[in-house]
Image 1 (tube, rainbow, N blue to C red):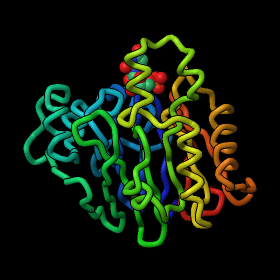
Image 2: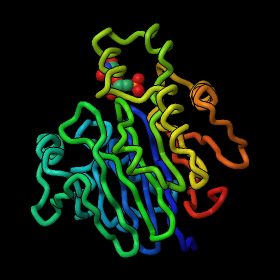
Image 3: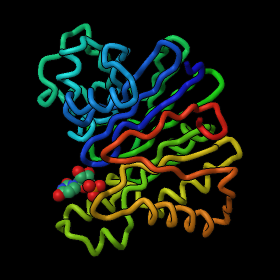
Length: 273
Ligand SMILES: O=c1ccn([C@@H]2O[C@H](COP(=O)(O)O)[C@@H](O)[C@H]2O)c(=O)[nH]1
């Protein structure tokens, strides 16, 4: 039985995003961007029962983050947390949610789930009021930052002292430029309100590697314009270009998957095991 904060990224990418954070008796889901049935299956793979969930925190109203929110809310009667603009943006997709389940969490506000504190921070993406989240058990900190066109100073500040980070590394810029997407979509992805490239993730990480950050899970990878090996190599090279060199024993880049959950990661432990 785990005592500290632990998490698993159930699924990551534009086909659907969901992450579970657990501490003691508290289990939080961040986003439910797959069908409710698929989220249930993924939870089962990590031996989490949906009835255990204390609530869903929503990052933004794009389908790959909210697809299963309405059905899960109705089936398990759990509270759903989002800022007002996100509630407005997702209302036509999530259907009827009972007023007592509709929780407004303003951007920048913190909420305590027992001894697990969640706090949101604003990010730059083409949604109504998108956010990332940090989770803190009083000693260790986990941050989730995906779907961001660029990493602002405010985001760096919010996630700076994390032990573990889940960070977007969406695309290889050349693969995207040469790829099959129409130009308007490429332009959107490359813009400040699009998605973080491998290079940009590496540049951001070079400012975040402070001795406390033990590992970073590369997330929201494009299946069309990225591969995990390319992402890891580009992030590392981009960090080296910024003068940041690391040994795998000190800092690790780890995988997330679009079709299966990551192993549970104990945030406070050196290796996550
Ligand atoms: O036909 C498409 C494909 C993708 N998008 C959006 O682009 C970004 C990146 O997608 P990846 O699957 O990571 O390459 C994401 O926001 C997709 O929703 C699109 O609009 N149209």
